[in-house]
Length: 124
Length: 124
DNA sequence: TTTATTATTAGTAATGATTACTATTATCAT
DNA sequence: ATGATAATAGTAATCATTACTAATAATAAA
Image (cartoon, rainbow over all chains, first blue to last red; front, side, top):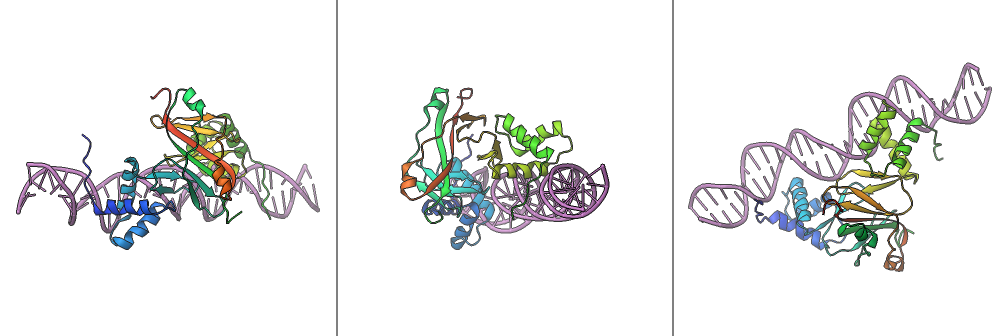
């Protein structure tokens, strides 16, 4: 008995915002953007739909050291770089190679979240 | 004017607990372990020292989808595997290769946090 | 060894991101 | 059109983490 998913303007808006931004926004930043289009949208709605979209695989999450979830509309596997000074998050289109040891250990590797930390061009 | 660091039993205990466990415990789990030795230790002390030890590079942190910080006493760069079913975290001694694109982009890569997700031997 | 200084602690309150709750509204199959 | 119910707005609650404060303990100097 999976619960049917019904269309909503708010969810479509939230998905579009995430898909059209490349700065890996937090829920709060997405909420601010959404309110420019839909001034009465509630923060709870933003959180609920971000969670749903992530579960459906339509967006992905990135857990960082700032303790806030960052959302990313690019779902084809890729790699991130976070500047330790300014906090900017950069994308790299490709994935890293899955260490063969994990498959040798009998694990079924499905996805990867690889983050490299350092100083970006502007901060180093 | 860096503030001098003074010895404390509690900090030594917390560091030892993290260094001697290989299950990537959360602050709360470390607190429970610590209380078996030092029954009056406070949760705030555990959090403060974990943060300090991580800043000093004596332990590392791992941010996961469960929204809790996991601590790791193994500080030489290595890779993690998290089972999407049981949540267990496994180590792999080696690091992945830093994508050459990041250095070509002019970034100074200092560290990496690579996590692979999937099903472990027992859960698949 | 005493004493002075101050980093550290225990205990508790506060913070902040996220989730839960509830009456109302909107979607959509019939 | 209407009934069933998924979704929302608004708000309260949760929970991991951090901040605060009086008391304690580590360390250097007398």
